[in-house]
Length: 89
Image (cartoon, rainbow, N blue to C red; front, side, top):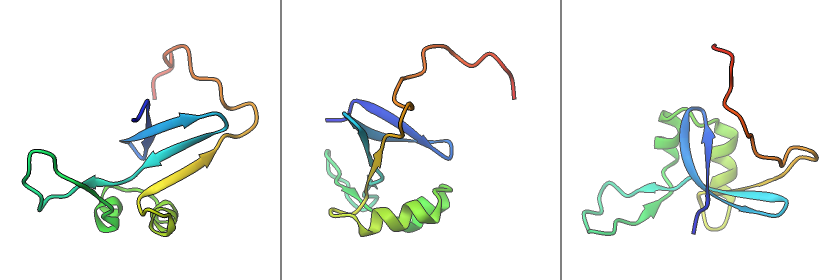
């Protein structure tokens, strides 16, 4: 289902690109589900521990279903990067 990865505060999240927007899934594997295919759940407290900004957690909590964020592309910002960064930080 997902064809991209989005990085938020040095953590990687699955995402789906569509024309004009990116859908990001902030759900986490359920630690209590020991089945071979554990379910994904929205865990705001864990997202906060991972350093995800509170505004993004709030927005994901209000979405239906919880845990998804839809980002509209900004004008002239949709071209993917083609080269690796050459400067060290």
